[in-house]
Length: 361
Image 1 (cartoon, rainbow, N blue to C red):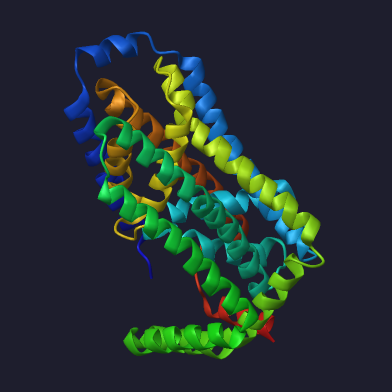
Image 2: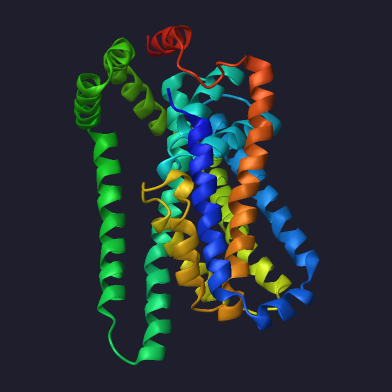
């Protein structure tokens, strides 16, 4: 069983140590003078934007579910999103939130696991597609900015640009092939689960074996759901795409509002470009919630357009609103879910496994 308390402490410790180190290295007399002139209304607005981003994600979930013929209130969808955000903040690559959200969709909207998986996957796909689509122009913006200062070719930026373009096409190719040829996806998933069963402790083997048996049915259900998205549910899918674009615009605007609060007028193209690249970097599965990685990468990238005396303060404020607030909001939502469904709301009990099997059938 995953020890979320331990993950929380590790994540928090790494994040705080990284932030304190950056503050220590960047704070000077100019920093203190700037903080005396801070405009708190913009910081409050940045916090409001973060809260709005939760609602936008919940609305996206609602419309994707509607594509498959299921109804859920925005408040329920928001509860689902926030609970997932908490566990995503405590796991590498934010992968811990998806299984919990799938389970909660089964509980509060009666959505079969395969279809719930399709909804959550489509959310992630829309997010990933938007980020990777923006990655190419973002890398060109960064390259242009760095060249204007250096006046020579930067092989590192060129390499990242090529990798970004290659990743986009490879991911799209794998996705399309998996949908057209579901047998390919079944074969890969089965191999992964069989390998996991061999390596897992004895007490987990029966559960993994049940997943092996039900995985093919789940993939078929997922594929049929995906086809429904692009056929019957096209209108709702278009609305979900709109909410995806709106979400990322609002999310990236948080840093812009923080800088306005610090009386800094950033280059907006560069601000958004660096955050696109940072979003890719934070996927690296090295630490829980990308703690440490996010702070160091943000410090490096934001130094391109934020005065050196304010980089540390900016990174700390940005991380506080986009990470620590996530944990607080997610914890409150999780307590509500536990009160509603019991202490095993996030567990994989035998009863839950039986429910998954009945969904597959």
